Image (cartoon, rainbow, N blue to C red; front, side, top):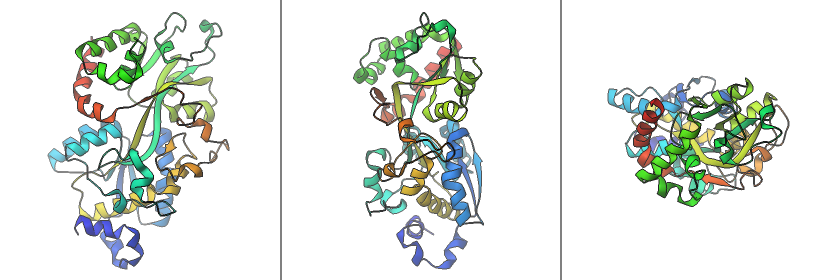
Length: 370
């Protein structure tokens, strides 16, 4: 079965396809995501409803998205692609697409239109940043802080540069063990205008300037690799302020009722979505395409916002966002895109990081080891 035929089977003409179509689809899928509250939202909004419709289908989840590029490179080299669908950030999708490790798709063939008939390419709009990328959510990386720190004498952080202010806000920080976001915040707080960040970071002097700023808090920083780390460190009181994904912070604040608050200033907007590995056997590809069409339709992306405070990537989904499925609270004010939360944001430059990520990763890890 050629790709075009597979696409036709999962397009709007699916009802006209022969019943034998199901026999051409694998019944097992390995989906790769990030674990934690985000993966749970995918399970509840996408996977469980899909499996209820297809009781013969089983899903195995792998929490290795942070290693997706390296793992897919290795699988491709070995000629053994064991993953069926992989959740990645946009810059990693661009890299995987450029390297031929992710499949290019036609959004209007593969993805469902909006309920009013608007083609998927228009409904997702500018969020289709790569021919291989299927957006799901808009999220941000931002900071949470303990709101009960006695040494702060009643002060609370309201500016990103308070992260670098050990005098007024003493205590352990937590930052991600990679250059993305950390370099942007460091340059911003060393005097670089937001609109100039990537131009400055493209120079040796700019890289040195960012590392010099990070040096000022390096000895007071716990470096995290998993999105769940900072919320746990904050809940345990091991750090007083730390970066992570806004949905993780929503969970520790609203669901766990910990003494933690959000610092939205200079949050970094990013996209997360699916890529389909290049080279899947035909039966596995057919199943994945069927699942992706369902999992990224207007209602499913709106449903995900019942479980986590990430904005749906489709324009048609936004009006359908309502209350949290378990807490009953309105989710709109907890979204990074809410106007009250987005007064000053950094727009993540996907293409820039796709070009420079490998080099800066190496530089960053060398700096950490010094």
